[in-house]
Image (cartoon, rainbow, N blue to C red; front, side):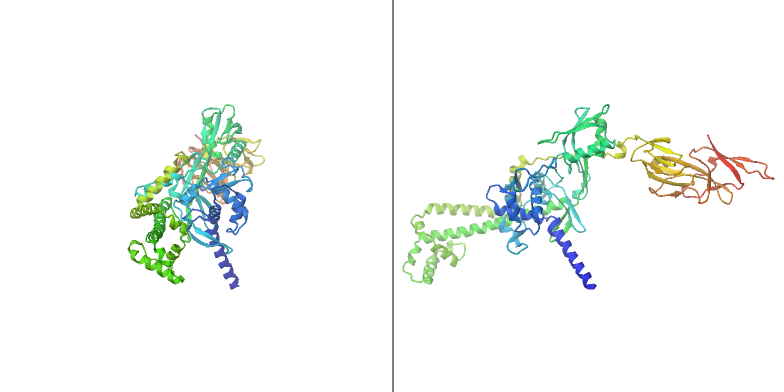
Length: 635
């Protein structure tokens, strides 16, 4: 049994770790999940400047992805619709209407230039064996931008989840630049669907936002939806409006969808209803307003970490500097190697060192002759001459020697030296160089990256405030039923679906319940009223009850605290209520049972002479004499 427990625990931990790291949570460095990374890597390997069939991309990606092709296809479509890294051709679905994309064999895609500029660099990428060990796949891309914020992400793992909203490219670049300059910055989400967004509770990526559709109310008799709230489509919004109309929460005459390239949903209003009266109801009961909670959870240093937006920007600002430094040093090394090789070639040809190998009869002698010939010129070289250098010199074609253009070689070497000086200057001022890189990106992509969602601040519309009290609450005394769905019975008052009512039954049991459609309460109900806490606290309940011992008590109280649907006892068990009122002033008139020595058969007690106490306190004695009736007379 212990073995089974150990096996299950280990397997569960391995499974949980796999789901967290390899499926659900994006990596901080490149902002993508493993399947997205494999798609981008496949597109990079296939890249020839032309579009590729998505079916071919999916097939190529199957070499790296251990799961089915359906997951690759759906992930590719989602990534392409972000319109950042992948350029699409064909029907990839419609984010506005919710229409599905075409089959993989009918649509095409390729990498955008932004991916090559900011994400891909094979020489700086670390690789690991693929799931079957046949190939190498990237562990993480050396991203120069925080794609975890640009793309956004949503995932549910074992015991944790992430919800990261997408942000605007230019605003992210500006935030990174300001961070490198030591300035303050603020960054808020931006959505493809546009609309309005209230970020007052965003809390740097760990709070929530409220998004609203953009409504055109120029015509008082109709409302036109021009942009959608985040997370909704034209289809889902129309369904929500129709459901609200069926429940009589929104009064409309009809709704039509004219969406093509831009959203256009026309809501015609009912007769006698105007746009200004309906807007709050649309925000309260339909997808014209959505609320999204966010949780910025990423993989960092091989483990899940909760971070803020500010921390992500600060991390990637330093990460950008490190990557640019690595690229400059890589280029510097290549240029030094090229300059060394060109210098060797120039010396080899100009000094006619190749003449010294004409009489040599062995491979070793040839190498020695070349090395000896280059020895006087070592001071002009950037490093020692290696066997590989000599081998390369010996492979120079004869035509190269005869047609060698010394001026062109010198020009190339001067260009290399100039570039090496530039790299040296950039390495001394890496932050300035990084800021310049961000400036170039902003200048290139600013025209196509304008903010779509307008930052705004708006009051949350509570459904209770908007809905009207248009339901009639009735009580059927004969059947003992209470509800707004009754067609007969005594009319009590009008209610809304969000109201709660206090019901006091004849036996003294009371409870607060949601407005029922039809509910059996009691054939002798003492009281029914709205359970609004502010208003209910003003009501004084006076109850006169007879104990089994024969004494009569009175209790005056307010009902200020309650738990919904929980039953409470207003009077002690086995006590009998003989009078009840909610009036604050008046008197209790009691009639005593006739007895030989009893001269006074009636008595009156003023209500105000009894203190108002808590709802759970006991009553006070009204009289010890046995009564036959009690009646409360109010003033």
